[in-house]
Length: 105
Image (cartoon, rainbow, N blue to C red; front, side, top):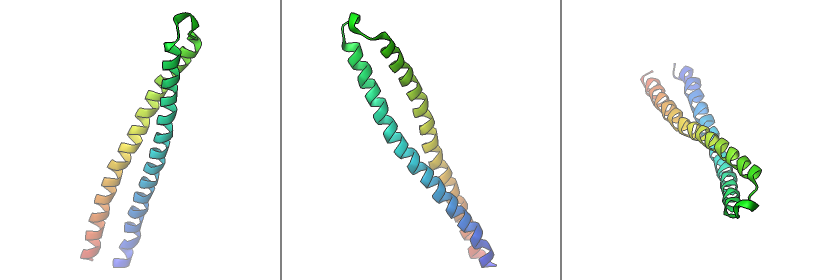
């Protein structure tokens, strides 16, 4: 009976590893994303520091659009990362319950 429960426990462990892998990828993507967003913010600041007649309004509008899109993307990445912690916790709880059941068998 004990051996029959191992695949279930192993499946939970594999899902936990997958959640952690996704979280790691999301964190790596988040770091790269923040670098890009920071660069765009710097470019916008530089453009806005110019005298009004020298400012490139298309560039300013484009950078502002990019930054608005960055805010949406940042929110999505936050949701993925936070969700991975919640899912990981839930899977760990499931795993503990399965381990307890295996001990009872």
